[in-house]
Image (tube, rainbow, N blue to C red):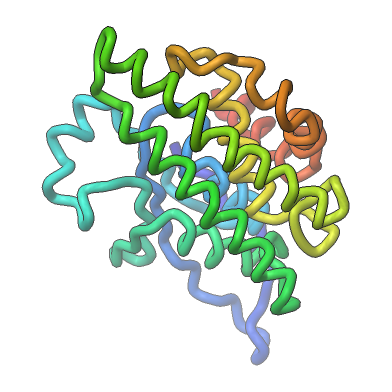
Length: 227
């Protein structure tokens, strides 16, 4: 899927039309996860990009050829960049979704880092089955998950309750929404779908609010328009 460039009228300082870079985002074939903040931010920045989506079997076939054996990746003019937070920050700076003020940028980064730490614990349970999965997930629910969920709610409250940083939408909000949705989806066996609502209700309200932000609404509308 190719998202079209929206800023074709932008000119360089000498009045010429700038050469457009070629972008490609590679991730799994679903809406969500680590790539979703990147996709939304790129659309908000008006950047045309090839939205390459792999099935899980396809990823298994290609994994060894990817730096760090992980996605998402971002290609810029054929050069591949890894690390979702680094990519999100880079694109966020291009579209006003990353704070310019240093302290607010630090607040944003703290959220990004905490979410990666949380994901680290969840991913460790992938591949487990039956009783081993049940024991591991129940240990998460009793231990590390509430620590991170409550901590993230505290960070939202520090930011004012609506956004995490800068009193405006940022990549931290976009990434948090994906985590909230994942934990509430029912796709993680033995993780109660109402866990966040029970211990950090502000994060549930945050998800609803961010999903109504114009940049987010516009991105998903563009998906529908492209079929």
